[in-house]
Length: 258
Image 1: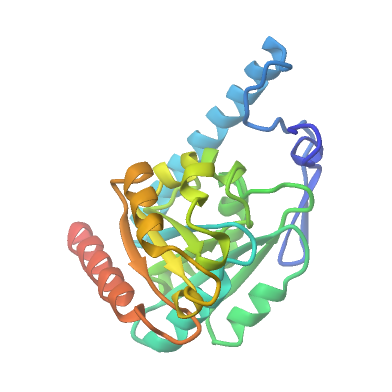
Image 2: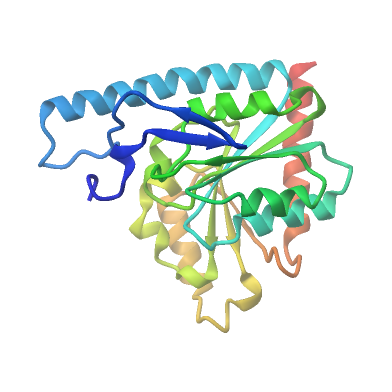
């Protein structure tokens, strides 16, 4: 599986039209029986480098008093819609910037820019996740002094992004009702790493046969540490609770920096 997903063939990343070339091979961060000791060593080296750069990102964000969210989910769960709704409902109250990761196109960044929020698009090509180095390059194109909240919309994937710290303050996993209630059991690693889980598309939960009770049991079993919100980014249902939480986290962050 690792050799087929394309992660090991990354040679360029595009950030808002600027192409960055990589001169080293990328190895997918999974350990399987077919991996040689050399492959495992390379993987550990890549993750070690990423962790070091993530720590630098985190220090930089903290020095700028910026609260950073790493938003993860499978494709189509509604990450961009959630960001758009947050921008629309909070208006000028919150100073938000966005970094968007996708394999191809800048469609999501264009959607976010229509809300007058600064947005930088990272086009990863074959890479099915964002890395700390990509974030370090992308944030240079944002005026961080004008922001208090940075939202990183990761590539749609419930596997690879779990291994990569980007320097975020908060890791959020989005689960949509259309995916079924067993996603936390199938992909436990990413849910275990989340401080927040947002269950999206609750407006169509009954239509798609989503078993809420079972979903909550699964989430609390796999991710007991996570704060859970049930929302509809489309209708706005439940979003006020999310905004209240977000404001509280930003207030705490500002208080710490004073």
